[in-house]
View (cartoon, rainbow, N blue to C red):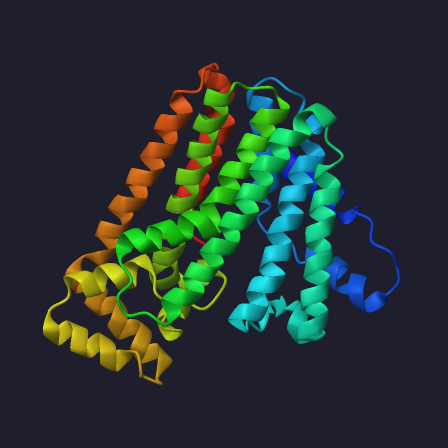
Length: 322
């Protein structure tokens, strides 16, 4: 993890130096505020690691890495508006701290800034970088739309849910890695293998998120355990439980969805899921995607010691407690 931590520190320094004008303050102050809220910064580090894997200087991929992170933060500002979320990383969201119109416009500027940063890469790489970036940006929007559509549906299937999280979360991890590979002049085949590694790690990561939301240690989780249950969100746990449940269990789960005692709602839902063994089934699916990621990386024609940092990061993401 030493390489990751060093790259993470570098990304944080460079993000803090991304220039925004002083005026109009209501356009640019929200961006300075939001970027200082922090985050895991996994995506930009993956871009640097993707370049490093194929022998390029990670610094050569810095602007692409920053563009990926800036795009990610643009999407979060707009997602928070759509989700009517009051908090992001335990701080007020932009639309709460300012207002919705300011949040929309500031997010738009952040999207433009992502393209400005990406355009600083070498001209010979820009056609491939822009094609990948634009495809990914559209897919992230498709994933967000599916997520919103699912809120109104009662017939969402597990394959549909996996496709939604692939689009909303995973493709940007794959994109981040492949951008680094493009800048390092990797072959088309190896670029796609590295993309698949990121894509499957992203799906496994989101499944782990679903599991942690209900089963994490409250002292280590850093936020309210059972938030997805309280909000009646469709997660892999929820969908698998309803797929397996008896008519009596379905009836009780339906009743729990209207329960206003949040502690009881979360505790009883967890009990029902444990009775059905839902957690273990979801962990098996998570492991399948993790193994698919490792398999893709194993086919990349680079020495195993060069892949070690990516495997270490993947293991860390899969074994985290928050």
